[in-house]
Length: 175
Image 1: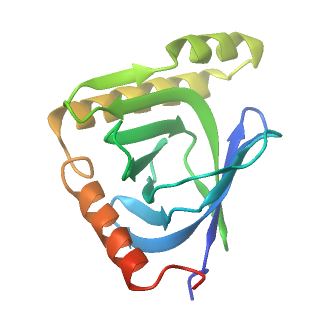
Image 2 (image 1 turned 90 degrees about the vertical axis):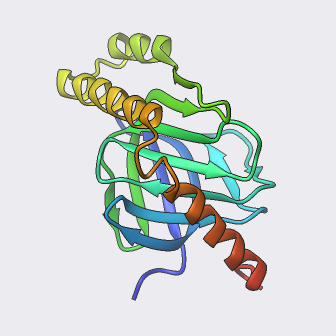
Image 3 (image 1 turned 180 degrees about the horizontal axis):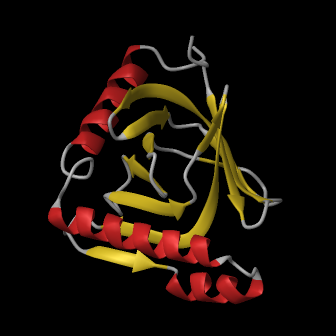
């Protein structure tokens, strides 16, 4: 039986707390594990005060070096964190955020973000070569997929977001 909630445990290299929040299981398919959060989902980054999302979001935890998010906010259309491949436990998924992010705006423009932070952390945190190579290769794969409109970035993500909205409208979690 799948868990009622899945803890998203984003870390920073080598093992410090980054983003922490809980999402609800939605589906599993060839793209990975789909999770969702309704408005009111609380998240905390490190020791910062918690925040509350005022929108619905869907996260795809891929078996590759990335996790993507679609939301009902305006921009970006899709936000992809480049991270180590996910490690799953019963009710938790842990990934190490590797700074780089790839986004696609609603205009179709694709952008690679935080290259400066990635370069700084390679030195300051002594990223091993396999981490650097894995992150750069994943960023390029994701950028190409987003630019070409390949799945799950063509319609699958938006379809899963629609599923989450229907679930939310039918019976909000915790109600």
